[in-house]
Image 1 (tube, helix red, strand yellow):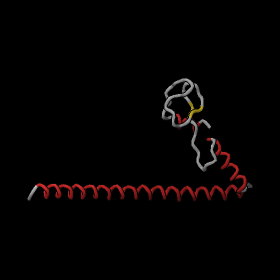
Image 2 (cartoon, one colour):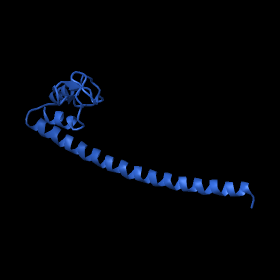
Image 3 (cartoon, one colour):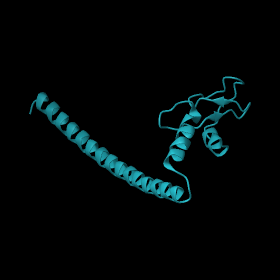
Length: 121
């Protein structure tokens, strides 16, 4: 066996290992995706139940849509997403989520500020 054959066998074994890892990652992603789908299905059912209950007590779809749009605009963009504001622990000013330090006072923004600002509403 010459050096070329040794190299080729090494590459074949290396590629087979990489293929096995790729299959393992793909399977893990499938499991994660199924878990997310299950959560979406559950949330859809909860939203439908809440919507029907609201209609039963006198709220209509137009009122619900208006509230959804109001909440959507809290972050300044009507995009179907809600990104809670981060508030500086030093001065309390509102910051974009991407900031790690406050633009106003220079304080380091804590990673739990997002959670605090969600509960502060």
